[in-house]
Amino acid sequence: MTTQPDWIAVDWGTSQLRLWQMAGDGTVLDRAESPEGMGRLTPSQFEPVLLRLLGDLPRRDAPLPVIICGMAGARQGWAEAPYVRTPCAPPGLAQALRVPGTDPRLAVHILPGVAQDSPADVMRGEETQVAGFLALNPRFDGVICLPGTHSKWVHVSAGEIVSFRSYMTGEIFALLSGQSVLRHGLAEGWDEAAFAAGVDQAMARPSGFAGDLFTLRAEGLLHGLDGAAARARLSGLLIGMELAAAKPYWLGQNVALLGASGLVAHYRTALEAQGLPVLIADADRMTLEGLKSARTPKEA
Image 1: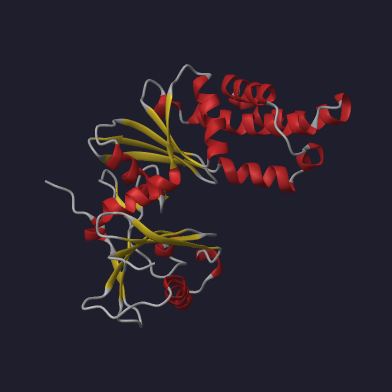
Image 2: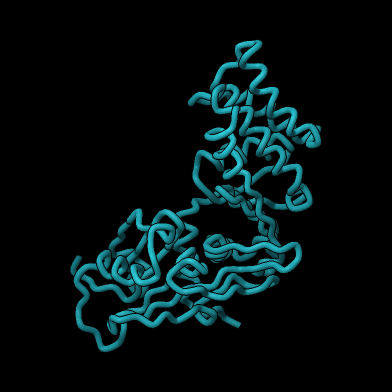
């Protein structure tokens, strides 16, 4: 790389770190990834990891700005960045926490997360993806769904996060498929019809969810339910439960999906089965666009 960066964009999650060296016009000059997420580090280890990934830094007249989103700002992270309360625009550099460091060549800023008082809810990192989506779709009013370990449904209007709700769907799937009795009847693979049946079953009768889970185990023992079909139906039951609970968010709304492609495809299938068209956006791109948006002050 011959061109020196004007600033550094960082997405520091729980398990993964992504870093982009940026030109002033928003061009990516270089990028790096590391498994050294927040969950593996103590506060004193963040700066050395960042410096190692940046490599040789030239002398500068002013410190190199570093803008970080995600779990580096959590209570267990590098430094706790206070939350911004809803309703609010996705936070930018003006609300960021300046982190004191030992290397004067860097000016490190950690973006806040977003909090909601009632019902109590928080996010760190997803708000930057929302900011990126709104930067590219400034007239969008509706709901942005971010499937994942803790899925988020975010109502946005006039460029602001109005409210949001989190669902532990991905974490529950991991626990049930990896640690519960259901694990004995699950196998890798996918069955689209079984997934759709699970979604329909959960949305039609959410009160039967706990019993429907054990039926998966019993059907494997008594009727030879295929392991891949059981896995897909488990996913369908969980996503169907989430959609039933989140119905006040998505019913009659414009909906955009941001996340990992495979998981987004399942949510898209489930939502389109309800007659709801959805817009798909690449989550990685939204993160970088959100960091770029955070650096640039919004026009009044």
